[in-house]
Length: 147
Image 1 (cartoon, rainbow, N blue to C red):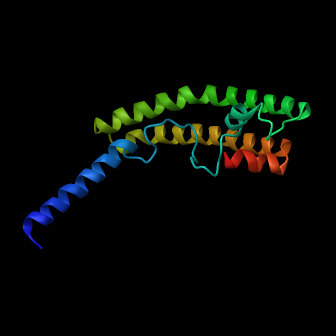
Image 2: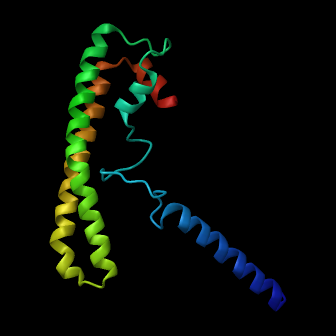
Image 3: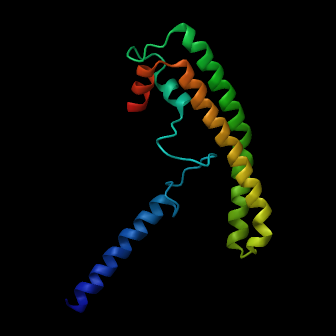
């Protein structure tokens, strides 16, 4: 293999890796903020899915389902909205201090605090999913998760 082909291959590989890193902010999350510890499609945002499909005739939510679902959404959003600003602020501070070469030992307590806040938000998320699933019929859950 010629030197030019190897060099061209290396440049191409570097370009692809750089593009992917820039698109995902180096962390695989495409630069989006999440207050949760687990961010996967297997942990859906049920209240968001319901909001988008509230009047959907196929989903067919009954009046008896809508009231508890609204309460779940209200409780969940309130809790997450209280935690999110704290999490964002702490993340920014940790990022800033890390890039200023502050010792990991000196940042350790802030990391523990961040983990605790994200754990609280994740518990809210898990409870939301659990409570929502207890209100919906299995066919309704299947419909929402296939959207």
